[in-house]
Length: 428
Image 1 (cartoon, rainbow, N blue to C red):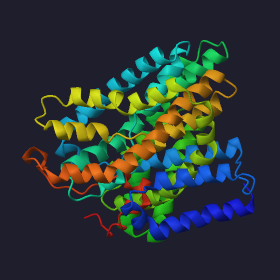
Image 2 (cartoon, rainbow, N blue to C red):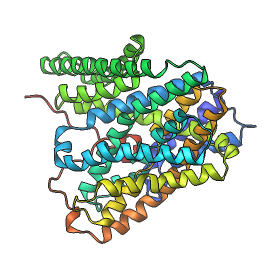
Image 3 (cartoon, one colour):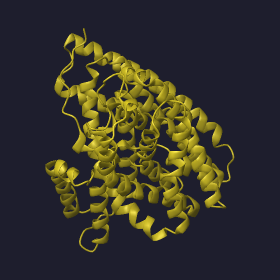
Image 4 (tube, helix red, strand yellow):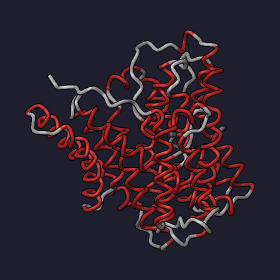
């Protein structure tokens, strides 16, 4: 990327900071804007040189996923989970595995000849949801808070839960590609190391930050960057121990949020803001680098699979697991539809493309993921406000929350919806 392109990218980010609210009112979300700008850069390549190296793309993707996983996990508190524990259990413990299985089976049927690992990669990479693509829903006070909270917490946890499955699928595909059959066992060991490291680093870091805050040792100006670095420590230290760094980052976020106390909310806010910036750059690179390849390699099978992934594969498991909850069908359909595929899915695809390079089947799997995300960016982004208004126009008593709680979590992926920094909270 030359100096002119870098300056224009920075100008676009600054412009989004200036006009994000007005663009949001026009149903233009951050992913829509930055994917479109990235695609424009690619089409205007004779003027702008936007050709980052594979290593640079991989580093950006990995850092983005590390900070998103850590921030999402640390933001999910016990109060949010207790409020609707039954719904979260149904969506995450039953609905998410059913979505992965449904997506995998559909991919095996559509793309005959793909290995079991690659169809599992497609199914698992497209299972996590991204609330930022439907930010108009998440920030609309007319939508019942209970519905927003359920979508937010589900989105905050399902990418971390799906990560081990994606990593196992990539490891299995790499082992099959190299005709080496011992790839799955080491991958499972890597996951175990990641969980253990994440628990230790998250608890130790959270407890240390809590004590430093109590004793007045930690500067407010540098506590946030310290937590940002802690997420990187969890990732890189686990890689050094030959473990799964992404699982470690997610588990470390859960442990940090539990150990850091109420003051940790402000410190994690800095991580959210940083993750928001790198997320914008990731969306722009997706538009500039991946979308032209996706469009060039798309065929009817890829397009039809993407449509079914966003509808049947997501909505049928959600409807099935929410039977018996007492939620009205319109609420079940609303929750089912607003399961957009976004940042986590494209990062999984970028990692798979880097680890399975020069594999034509892997490139096709990545194209499937990319097409699904591309459709989701526009369909969920443009439908969020109209459907939220329609849904809110006819409220039902069953939709009212039993406990009013603040919506937290994934809004950092959409800067227009970012909260103000929380007030300083001291531990008693």
